[in-house]
Image 1: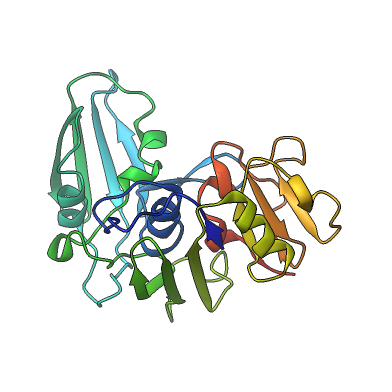
Image 2: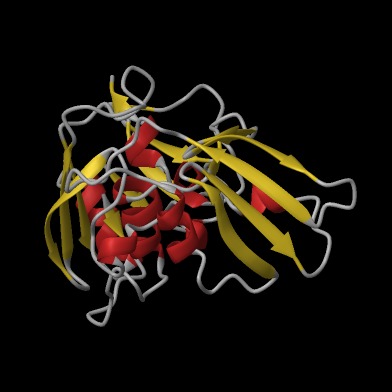
Length: 245
């Protein structure tokens, strides 16, 4: 995938252009919840949640079958460490696999908000490093240029997502050049705002449509039947959900 938004100053803890958002949420890390391809809210690292009547106290039960890419188990401590900058309250562990968000102000939409890319869960023992619980582990990373990831051998999403052996992101700042790379079959997908010269190519599809695209994808890459329009690139999770047709 050729993407915009990369910078040579990008790190796993900093840099929030499209390139790093896809790298984090779409590949290396998970969030507590996710917006599925049909636009519905589903559990991810959380398996369920409850709230107080006034929506100020939220308790999330966490998966127990998850490990980080370095083999360390995922626990509530990782959620607490990852939520250190949470602004609307405090986050504490109420069990090895349970966390509670105590909010300063009611928020009925907290579970949906926690599906946003900025709420990715990192390892407490390796904050700011490319060690997550996602479907793809880090193989190599050159800030502002290239990311290569490899599919983990076993994952709790096996059989439902993660159909590629490897996913590579390459940084191409120019939309024109990204389009040329796709048109010349050098990449499988790009982000873009104008269909441009790709309009007449039958083996390239545009999402959400040709008139208002946010991405262009090779026809060899299949996508879920219904794709959320909340953000470009299938809610940033293209690498999880797409597959070769």
